[in-house]
Image 1 (tube, rainbow, N blue to C red):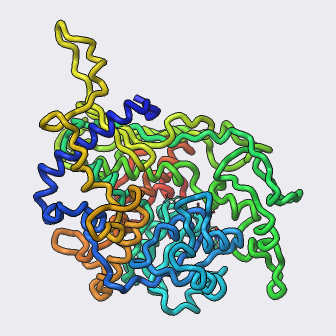
Image 2 (cartoon, protein in one colour; image 1 turned 120 degrees about the horizontal axis):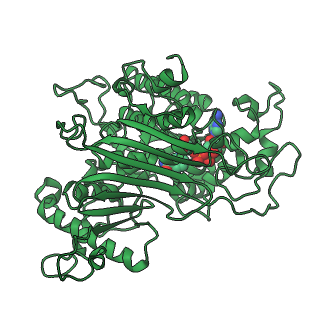
Length: 556
Ligand SMILES: NC(=O)c1ccc[n+]([C@@H]2O[C@H](COP(=O)([O-])OP(=O)(O)OC[C@H]3O[C@@H](n4cnc5c(N)ncnc54)[C@H](O)[C@@H]3O)[C@@H](O)[C@H]2O)c1
């Protein structure tokens, strides 16, 4: 079944999901402490276990104010995270993050949260190019949010942690697993919190979908198909603001990874400084302006489709499978479309990878069973020349199928039973509404799910705003963990081996497992081989890494 379902099929799928989730709410969730307040729609804060900071938001700086930095600024809640400083080297992005982007609703800018006067003050006095200078000058900073290109995640996170700052760094955690392990070590050595921005860990939609999967409604999952499909083959029309210079290649195709270079950035980033004689591009370690602005497409600075897109969805797949470690991966990738004169790059434009995960009853599965043949096959494809199906995850169980589409919708379908003698064509029941007792879809129960964050629940208990994708909750919980954090206890463990203090849901070790999935898939494609995951790669205390095994890279 494709994700390009008809509107009617989607409606049926939504209703089925509401019915299934509604009955779970009534059966199990309402019996819990959170459910005791069932008259109030369940907020993400209650679900994820955090509360208001009582007027003491965490004083935070953001480093990297591009596309994603802009989303995080737009989605942050100043009652939890108060942004007091910011850092970026591109004037175009500085202007956009301060004033917002009318074309993208999520990028509201500082202005939406802090008003004109304070936004101007931040822009004039608290906006830096050099993050180290920002940390030197802005003594009040308690935490940083990092939304920089991938190759800078480890270096900048570690420097901030050494200076005692808590860090929320965007995904993918780092450029390789050696760097991930160094980041985890820095968090532990300095007793600060490290969180990584895989926002599905804070999506009520995914939390809700997981509850339905765990209830057994779709039976035994043996296969998950995840994908992110785009068509970047359409030509693009140059605009007035684009630089016209022989030293700059401009896009010829519509492609978010190959944005145009605008005059404003070109002039500022290539201007030689009177003091050190360097341009900003040189000072900040880029080969050229192309590499700075289109960092995703180069091996030195990015990690290709698996790092940028696949990592999110394999994170989701592994959440559905109980966050178990994968068994193996193989795949093929190709740069079969882009090339010279055509938005050229190092990164592949098409990838198809296949993972084996342990099923529940596998010795390495959630139930630690004895059936080594209990394996779940997970396929992932990301393509750049056809947009059919957009992006999502299809969970195929023995009794039904769940489709999570674009982080914003869930559809549930029953698996048709085999035709009995004298029965109508069973295909008619393949997509059918499951009804609650009394024959009605239990839609009202779903209001306790998928709600906005604690702060966005109105005083009367009504919910405001659309379903959150998790960015806001991720930052709120990060701030809550910081306020509760006892530095003296740090990363001490309890008798059961778990950390004694609350950590963000996607803390270093969780995020490192996601990075291992994405980056080992890259190695499997590069070496055209099937790779079996080694347990010590997932152990932050071990120096073993996939890149050491397959690329001969020495541990740091
Ligand atoms: N969680 C998500 O859904 C999601 C979505 C998109 C991107 N991301 C991640 O966010 C990160 C940033 O991606 P993006 O799309 O915002 O990229 P981007 O290129 O739009 O933004 C990066 C910004 O970093 C700035 N920068 C680069 N080097 C710098 C330096 N040395 N000092 C200061 N600023 C510097 C650039 O000027 C730019 O404004 C990446 O790791 C990406 O994977 C996450």
